[in-house]
Image 1 (tube, rainbow, N blue to C red):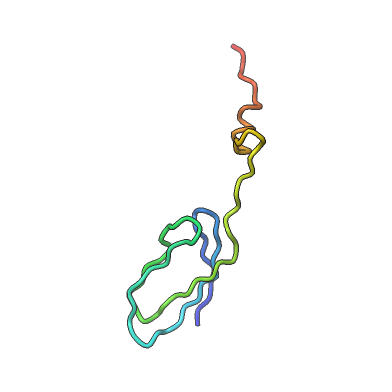
Image 2 (spheres, one colour):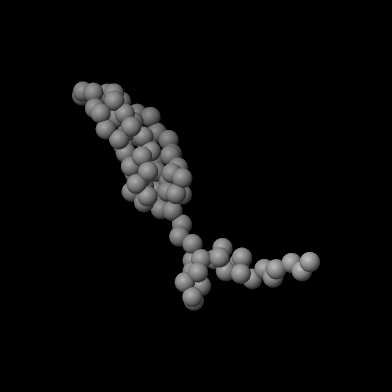
Length: 80
């Protein structure tokens, strides 16, 4: 059995194992958080994914803006 971790672009982390199946399988695995296809296969070596860490969610301030948006608003414009 082969084991390793896979990271999705959304920040989710999966524990990935791979084992031999009785016959060839054609399938794919999509991230449960964002739906991105992390892997497709067509072989007897079949991966199994287990979510280790969900992606982090940006916090919002009282008016619903994201932290990064609030930081941008806090910077005064440069005077010319």
